[in-house]
Image (tube, rainbow, N blue to C red; front, side, top):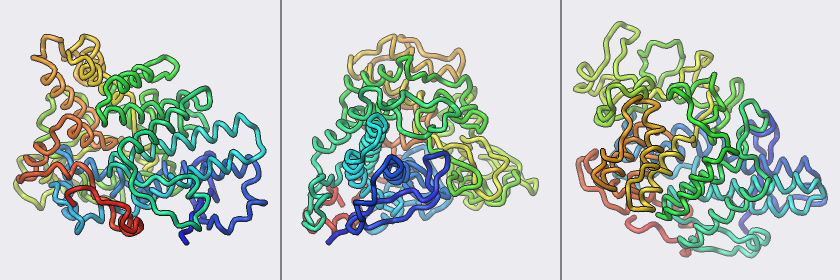
Length: 500
């Protein structure tokens, strides 16, 4: 008999992040004891939703900076390069069932079961005698977590197995399910996110300093809905979601300067829609710079792993006056006095800038001793929404409108003052979409896995990856292969993605 596990918080930080998780066989729980009260309900919520949407020691859980659900897809684009060549099969779109360990690592695959865990926890919390408003708020957070998690898996693999509540409540039946259909997967994502965002159960956003910052909000729900609708080409619905997020109630606005978005001083800024909370003195930290710094980079930090890069060719697509270049290092003098730049390094694969420039998007945290940066890891922000809305308007109307250009310019001119576009600058819809695609690449580099999504949506992924890899790239690679363990557990009911 398959066992169903729940996870609950043993210790917490700021009431939402776990530093220790204890697993419990649900079949052996004495339900006359647990869950019984609001404290138990919070434990169920934290141990499911906020165990998923967090990071641990930089290298564990779904948002791992090593092989997480946002890092791996970004590597499969024209933006990313990496000096760690065990990732070459991802960088060059050469993955298969025989070399997919980094693609389908346990950091990703182990979290599929949390969809079922959240479904069960909704029912468990419904049965608790507690304040009804608080109960409804907890359930809304669980629904947002389910929709968000299902969307991330859909983006990665396509439809996955979605268990029914009846099967989860009767595990002794051992019922096996096939993968959901496209429609079933979409309905699950949309229904949960829509339910969570309805009414006044979730706040629009949490302001800076709020003790609940990092929890689910209406802003998160509508952002994920927008991304899903863009992925499936439902432009009118995507446009509606973008317009929803522009309402004053949400309070989103762009930071005045790009580089200031990613600093410790400006954490929880009004541009950030969702971020992973990171804290010093805990295992909840991100090691972005640690994974990038060459060993001779001139900062006083113990661990420098010389990994991620931005490809030279993509770097050269920036306007030389673009302020976003302030977060990218194309030249530095090492601790031994050696100068590194394109001229000195690009022809020698032993040099730190051989594969590309240093994408140092986040401010270096001077309090970092090893790799424990406390700067929150941003997942979604408002610039992403504004440029997606610009795209949705053009696709929905099949015309380049002044409104769409204005939205694009709102983001572009922050980093390129006085260099905004006019409607007359575009020869038509396709030209607009090409320029917008590049602008989003410049804005959202190595962030949120957006570049792969964008290239696929624009129908350019295969061409771009073929140019990068130097060989033809088949369209079946748009979706990653399901892990063999999921196929085996399906006992013939779970089919692999076509082409693998």
